[in-house]
Amino acid sequence: QKLFPANNIRDTFGRIWRGGMPEVQGLAEGMLATYFDSYVETYLMRDAVDDNGIHDTEGFRRFLRACAALTGELLNYSNLARAADVSVATAKEWTAVLAGMGVVHLLEPFSNNALKRLVKTPKLYFCDTGLAAHLSMWPSADVLMAGAASGHFYETYVVMELVRAYAYGNAKANLTFYRDRDGREIDLVVEEGRMLHPLEVKKSASPGPSDARQFKLLEASGLKRGPGGIVCMCENAYPLTEADSLIPSNIL
Image (cartoon, rainbow, N blue to C red; front, side, top):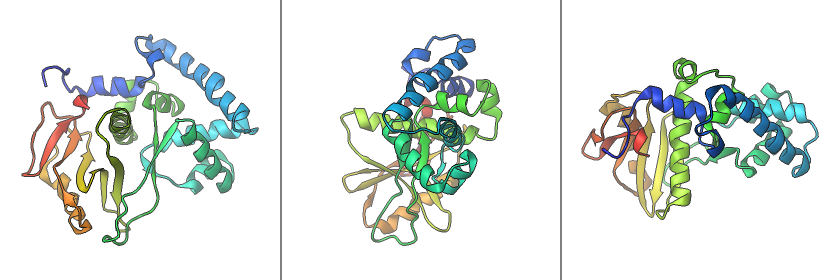
């Protein structure tokens, strides 16, 4: 734990607002918007046109901004289409393009034959929170931290850190989320073999055992439920229940 800096919420949202692109690390805050604008024009728009045959560039820019604004939410093609003023078919096509370009990540829902009434809709996450914050016009880390989207951006940050960790690390797992038609949700289910590790993401520094109550929903899956936890802004990792712990997000 001593190897990591304090789990300070302002520092965390500084990282979220700046994002993880190597080129922006150490870049003056006043230069971030210029960099992201250039990135969109010279990389994203070029690939959209040259590699994916997209000719409605203004519509694609609107769609990009809509995806950024809706990061951390269930994928809703109708909402995206409406926000970008394009057809639902185009929204589906462009979502696939952005996923293929590594701009967005679609987190698939947990699927299990023993559990009924599970949703089949993925959640949409913007891969880089800094680019998402820029496209959503959050002018500073403090404004983002205090804004209505702060919870979704914090969740996006945590989920994408774990997605990358499992993609590039030695440990392999299937990452999904649980949501049923009654609206009950577990933010992340880490499936290693036949062992399920449930995780919730909370911006709070002091979640309680009630925040892990949905974990019991996995008991009917027929798979073994392993240790889980709540990733949050607590200072140190410590037990929450017999099976679950509070996990500081800065150690991910």
